[in-house]
Amino acid sequence: MATKKRRRLKKGAKLILIVFAAVLIGLLGLLAWNLRPAKSPAAAVTPEPTAEPATPEPTPDLVPDWLDIGTAEAKYRIFRQDHEINSEVKAYVYFTSGLIEQPVVQSSDNSKYLTVNWEDMSYRSYGSAFMDYRNNPEIDENIIIYGHYVYERRSPDDRTLMFTPLALLRDESVYPDNKMVVLMTEDHLYGYELAYVYDCPLVPTEYGDMAREDLQFNLTEYDSDYFAAYTKAIEGVQLYDTGVEIADGERMLSLQTCIEWHEESRQIAVCRQIFTMDIPEEWR
Image (cartoon, rainbow, N blue to C red; front, side):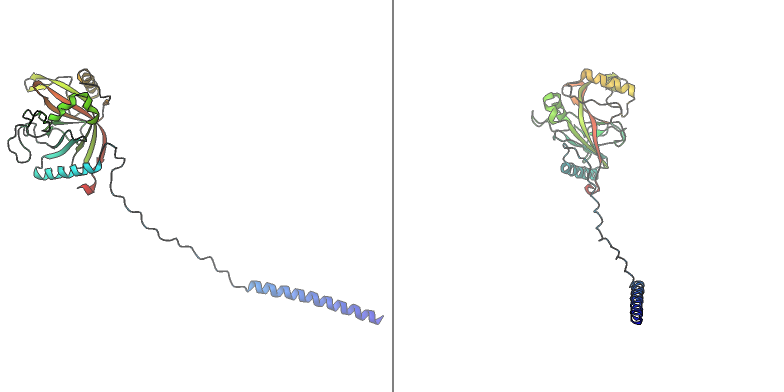
């Protein structure tokens, strides 16, 4: 009996020891957890520095196919050189086909350059191409440029002087290759499409021969009523239908020259502005 009692005591002591050991192990584990080193925060990821995007050169956006930008730059530099020779050279006009290419002067009246060479102010029978003295080419609805038809051609086939080549536009077959025109000023390039070619009869007045009342091509601005009458009158006298129309309020370029052996009329080429851009700084 005593032996059994001793055995039970031993088993109880052993159980107590096991429990005590388990509790001790648990306490040591908990202590170890609390004393563990703090986990270092993840290192902040610093993005690699990126290079600043290069500032694009001020090149024109959406340059149309018909405009060769290299050619335009070259002609602008010629214009600037011409302006250095004569400060009254205010613009440069050219057909992209090469039909006409002229510096354009502007004075305080429309008579100064009728028989004056803009380069040295000497007499020249066919004068210089000039812009109407009233025009501000940057804001006016209609820019008017006058140029002589030159009778004194170097040969019967030479039509390169002044606005003489405009006579070729009387033939509808040449229109498709000669319909795009560029006008450059100091700050802007304007692109035009030829819309109308017509003969404007002149009417004697106390101020001299003037354009017919309904064909006033030389107005810098048009009110809506007169513009409607003007374009309707053009349709009645135009040499052919180009398929291009000009809407009220659109900007225009009107080129005027004489008609060979017909002093009673003037040939007018009216162009519709379809493109504009600022002159890039690198051209200057």
